Length: 388
Image 1 (cartoon, rainbow, N blue to C red):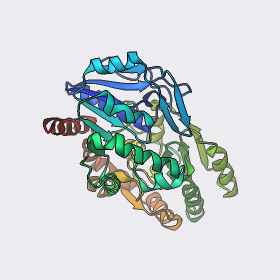
Image 2 (cartoon, rainbow, N blue to C red):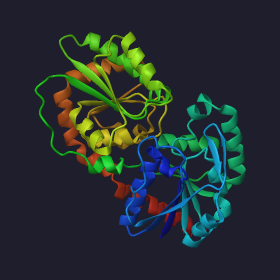
Image 3 (cartoon, rainbow, N blue to C red):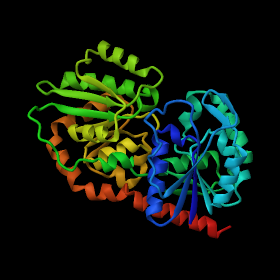
Image 4 (cartoon, helix red, strand yellow):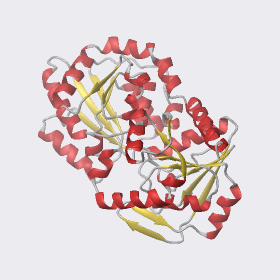
């Protein structure tokens, strides 16, 4: 099967780009012919370059925009004639669009006559429409409904929660559910052995961009400060791994000073896949309190690293029953007191929770397997192609 993954922001990196890469490489291993369509970028990527990240079996169809129209985060880039010809010559049997509120997506129905699948990657969450640029997002959605969504054969939801988001906005949409795997570079760098530590400090870890609102980092700092004051005789630390986001690191560092926890909270900035893997394995408990997130590569990586995890109920990956039922995961509301109680409980039960995480590793590994994910997508593609 010829599959074209359409993600014009692929070279900009980030979670969606890593998801596209993981899926594309797994599909190649299953004997599919795969390409990724992407535009050149004019600024440094947030999470490191994606150039050279793909295997030689994946064709990258890259174009230099002939012109660019930009309003805030909304970008429409001119597609040169040569790029149009290269895309047409590839003759995909299915085009899989990744991400939304991307004006470049609107041209896909005019470029291809094959079935189109669209993965919003969280773009249809209610909070996305409310937190910023409401008028522009609403206008885009209306335009996309006319020129894009009516041509989409099926929408892909990363979890049951995202299917609800999609069908609420597009009640007639056909939706299939498939999770995603981890960042394959982090997964490849996973360290099998644990290194014994002499100190008794319980190390909490968060991995992701330092987006205070989306990732709930304001709540996380408050909860950590209160948990530390309650854990008399126990030492805890919190490490936040990820790049600055619109000046958020300065605010977080200032807030840590105000809460008198600056000597226990550490910021690493962006790290390589090998460094993220090492941080996961040297930590004890993963914690992420997102206000909205349909899936999270970092959560998948933490669970594959056999970490007990404290996670917000708003993380869609936990709407999969297979994940929500894991006994070393605790789902918490966006509430400081409930989070503090769970942090204290997990710190006290750490040895027990580590043993449980080991016992459930095989189940976690199978659920997040990119091969399993790729097979499910290929099956869905074939269903939609056969119905044309």
